[in-house]
Image (tube, rainbow, N blue to C red; front, side, top):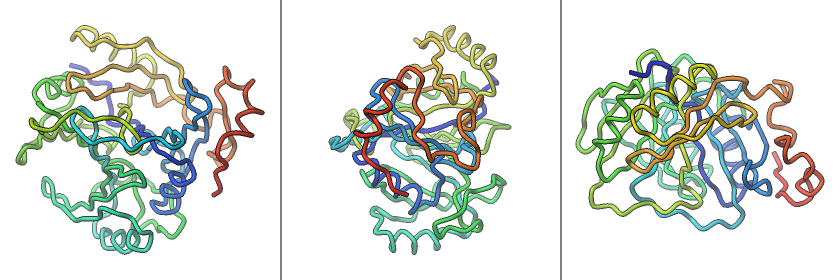
Length: 310
């Protein structure tokens, strides 16, 4: 069994407008933008990263804001909800804040004995906060969010699937243990992970397949410490029959990708080298950073990418 995976690394989604997306994550949710770069495969599109102060794996929400993208159609074969961890007793603070910021889809819920608050991002993104009592991760604070209420990082992701069995087998091979079932939801957890260590599988046998667009999660990434651990995971997953890409250098981590039996795109990403590799930790996310192969486009991109004001 694979034992190198530590939990979630990042979640990458799509948006319609870069400025709106940036304002929501930094001003409404109070996260730090830790990197402003571009999509490796479409350099005329930003790749924006929001996280704690350092961009710690397990806290990083990233977006491709495609200008004027159509909204995605929710369905199976995707991450339906990305869940963030907040301190116990803080949901009232967030309900009030969301009302002040005109956040939509706000509703309380309970799952596996945890109190949560569902809400939508600017493009209908499926998001939630859940109160936790054992999350010691240091938060990023600012924009009116103090340490007693601030987001600590991810708690979990919930995947919508027509059938959960083969996805459950894959998670077991990746080192996850099933921890319970509540209705049509099965919960899986990594022991000794990074606190972003829960995956929920939701069975929706009558739901149609998702159509990706603005508000959709593009892929979910799982964390390993280094390249050696990544290669060990890749070898083990290949032996289970998964079709996996070669290792790809993403500047701030190395990545491999594969499409899972449930249709969700998975990535295995290294914790190294991190987001401070090309700018000072005190100024993360301020300057436009370009992959070396796109540096020759800097003048064009600086003139044509949508301005983002903080």
